[in-house]
Image 1 (spheres, rainbow, N blue to C red):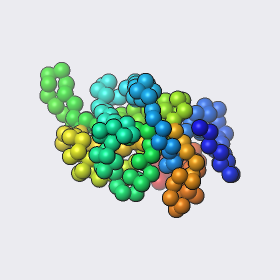
Image 2 (image 1 turned 180 degrees about the vertical axis):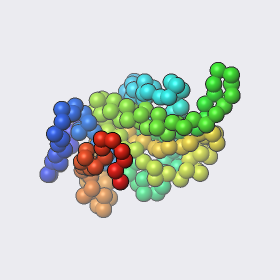
Image 3 (image 1 turned 30 degrees about the vertical axis):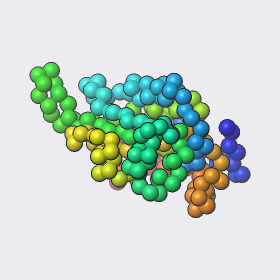
Length: 201
């Protein structure tokens, strides 16, 4: 489904950036169409190949497809605002990261990079989704206590975020108050986030 905007937003940059980084964005309007198991497996495989410290791969992905036996529980772990639009996604995922690692001797130690590494996996998941014609929307608007309970996530794992995946729909499927914000967002200039030498506040 190709969605046309009345005033198409334009993202630009002055580098030789691959277009996929400008084309990927996070809509809330999804059409509720099913996602195939093959596509979802490919999307999760992209996350699997992300880099991680010591190749520990601390990420875990829990998923539900729209309408399956887990769907209502997955939705219920989001805050009500996010439930209102995420119900039309094709799939909902929760990402957790292992906060500890075990060395060859079996001794467990805190894993400093668990969130950093899991963020890399999420980024690859988002880009692969886009390559297959889907959009993703990551969110931390979660009832974290309920999510841990209904998903059975052990205490040593940090629930990082939830992700909605689906085919984009026209903004008209959203409540009126959300429609105006249904456009790709901009970014800070490179000069505000990357500096030669020491940190600049």
